[in-house]
Amino acid sequence: MAAPRPLDVLALTRREAVRFSTQVGPARLRVVLRKAQQDLERRLRDATGLRGPGSDSFTAGQLRAVLTHVRDVLKLVKTGIGQVSLDVGDATARATAKGSIRYLEAVEKQFAGLGRAPIAIDQARVLDRAATGARSSILHRILTDPDHPGRPGVLDRYGDAVVENFEQELQTGVLTQKPWSEVRQDLVAQSPFLQAAPAHWATRIVRTELMGAANVASWNAMQEVDAQLGGGTCRILCATFDSRTASDSYAVHGQIRKMTEPFESWYGAYMTPPNRPNDREVVVPHRIEWPIPKELQALPDSAVAVRWAQERRKGAPPPRPKMSTIDLKAFGLEPGGRVARRGRR
Image (cartoon, rainbow, N blue to C red; front, side):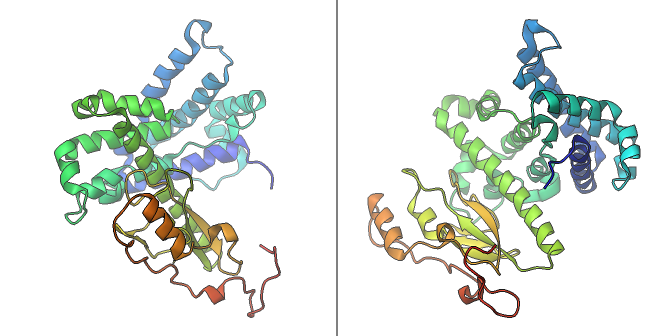
């Protein structure tokens, strides 16, 4: 498959911006983009320093590439993004974005990959409560769920206004591709509580929230692809295994659900991970006609019990949720019921 052209990437950014705008309105999109623009321009000044605007460092090139997308969409918002035609020929598209295309093509020649990288507007949209309501962030989800076990502690520590500020900072971080360490510093700077708390608390918020936004955006894309393919795609939960992996992640690894079905854990149901702070699971889309690879198969109960014991927990681990809502015998069958040949995907 040929690599996308800068023109195609810019068109993708515009499509995601239109979707954002239809959900929250152009005024809200303009606020988000302007904050991102200000952040990018400040970081670009810091990156170039005394070397001037002609600096050719990778960092400066990356910042300018992202800024190019942000300015292009801001221009469309100003002129009426609802009237943007996305299905136009190359000539028309180039005419509306000459400067943007010219820069993205130039930076692509200098640093391969930068001109082909869209900005994560869809991921930023997930963190906007005007678009996704109580699902806008893990913290907000906990705040609005009276039955969530973490609710009292979060209410004591943050409060709704603080959480909304966190969401806005995270949005800016997503759009501007800001390093996690800098996003963490921004959160701490606006929260007296985090300034007095251990440093890892802010890191936990950033990691959990950005991973949550990425997984929701990925799920949206999976649903679109599944619709285009006429169905037949499921989601498989995949845990990250290392010395920090908890027993609840052992218990859900390999869990299979249809596109619109929630996963289940010891902490409740959830459409996309994380289901708790520091949860590092990801979702893998999988065609039912494909065999399930070994690395995505559920672990035996004994492995969960061993990890539970290693954590020095008392008693036996809780019962595991249903691991698959799809009959496992259906996997690896080609149309007509034939068993798919080994290695065929």
